[in-house]
Length: 391
Image (cartoon, rainbow, N blue to C red; front, side, top):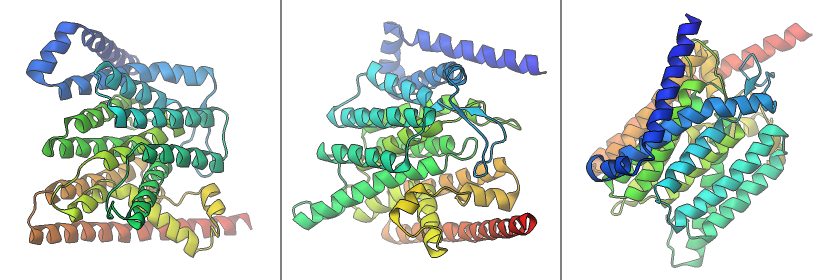
């Protein structure tokens, strides 16, 4: 059975290699661009390349001993290769460069994202301090804003509006980066969220006639889907993890695309609510753990917040509630899918419908918060039992 499964997977890998090589032929490119669509071409290109590269980068990680070892704050039980993010990074970058869809704005995003990816790769390999990594994120965010990629929720013709817009942009991008990194704690979770968010960005881009944004989003979608079979396996542990390189690069690019995208020309409420809903799970977890850690005295300063690591994120709480990692991941992904549907529907809704949709999303979040509270309570009970056992 094992041999058959390996052979079948190898056949899939060879098929992906064959399709990728076929896509290099000019007639094939011409056929897709003129009769099928560039969207499909970029998607299949990035999907096949990511699926092809992942086993190779896994072998590199094993050779270089870039492994994630089990620890008290982690849920996996054996050392697992990192560097999965390298496959996603290469597939995503190659699909953009080969299709010549990088404008100046996207060029800055790709360069700054590449710097973050390299720094995160060093962190996966040798280890870096949380303070240094946050400083690099801040610098890359400043470079991005200096290039003109800034939110415009506040009046852009006033000094205070520009300050608030820049501040909100920095908080958004750095917050999403670290939220994605925090949620890379169970097989398939961060990758699955990346797929869902990328997919909704594609839909928004299609609805608003922003093809360049859509091509970039679908390149990320294909890259993540090609990696997923190695990271989220039925009844088996992951063969490879994203690592900080993957989660940080993924979070940064998606956060930057949300800033670049034009969410609604006529309704500022939709412009605010739609991305918040699509990135809702990431925002929810970041806000929840920050409030909980401060309220319980686990962190008392910004430095302590940066350095703190623990098993109190949404996937940990859902795991303790459901008792199954796969179910916990699927529940969180289902929440993300549901909130995203609300965001898509919200775009063309009437005022009364918009209010009802926001109320629906709020109700879903409240229900999930109740479940979350039960999971958090079980974590505390287990911690108390552990302390009693140690005493």
